[in-house]
Length: 261
Length: 287
Image: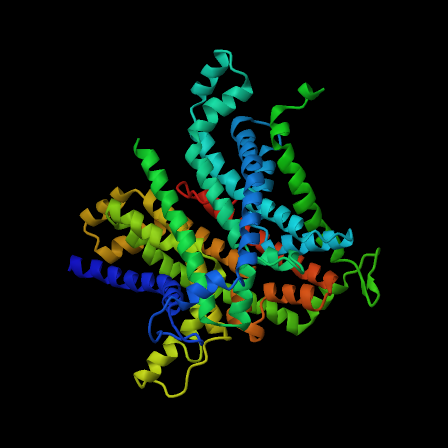
């Protein structure tokens, strides 16, 4: 009696896992179709569209732009977010809750509003600066992830080690860089990873803030999905899936190894 | 001079500056702009009119968009709740080493963009897609079903995009439950369904409320899925705001729509945080 019930749940859940993974699997499988029209299941197997994606040059510029944006964004949001989290974790002051709410609020406010707001502000000032304004918006979008991850991690750092360093004569700067930061290394890595992925995958704000001469990879994938379904779209999507999942697995593996030692 | 400023303000200064310039001012400008008149020669510099809000709340077309957004979000949240509860329950009862694999299977799709996941659904739901081919091959239907560019398609794809959030909230609550209470009920003679409905389910109520509100709040402002799977036939708030901003260039009206969306989201989020603070186990506070 008992066993049958457990199996019921397992069967239902297996179906839901199938539902979760099916769309990704379908994209990857159809990318191997050799023909010109997107087909599922594919007839035959070829690397043709991967070759096309890597050599045609169509995706090169958007890819480079996306990587550039993600890296510059993270170079700003990681240090800025980390010191915000440090201030919130270490000091008690009036308005602390409000500050924390402010720095996490981009998680709640619809991202579209950020895109429209920044677009309207820049055009009111008569500025184009597509690249700069997109990076600035991405910094705002990624800071909450850094703050949230680092806040949790700073809470776990033993105050005693910091106090010991100060007592032994280290300056607050030295203490922060030599005692505090090494203890939160894996959280820093996780924050950087989240920030890069969030910026690299971001579409909605990019739709509003880019302009002639600047296209990101998510934008080209989006417009192809809308107007130009093709096996090459499946191939570039598969490459993106593989790259992000591989990065994610490396992160998880690295963090689990850290915990053991 | 510098000594007088407390260190925490110095630490937060760069972040505050960025947020002020790129977040607070732009969003506040949207609020102001939503009360400006839209004249043929451009947006009026001054003045204060309720025109855009009146237009929204008196035109059945726009009210319909808001209603459709809310009803689709409600349906999506409820489906996510049922599927998510089943997954979270299964994962929280799995042996320790399998738990991590199951959670990763659930969370990994979060790393891939919604666009790509929706592209997968287009292949599955399309006129010549997987479902139609399978059903026609089996002889169950003769004409292909219309799934793409319908509300059904949008709901399916949205559930897929938002399910991981639900599972992660519910899992953290179900993991934190005191399992002794279940054993106690079972020892006292309660049947398994009784244990579940009288002990487990009520204890996980805060997670249920929080997860549903979280999914609901993301759903009402979601853009990619209605744009790709819904097409022009299924207009929701987000796609309408995009349309008004980019295609019709009616920025004051787009701003008013944005403010209506923002207020709706903030109401739902406040309820969400209140629900979570009532649960001692919940760890997924948004703000």
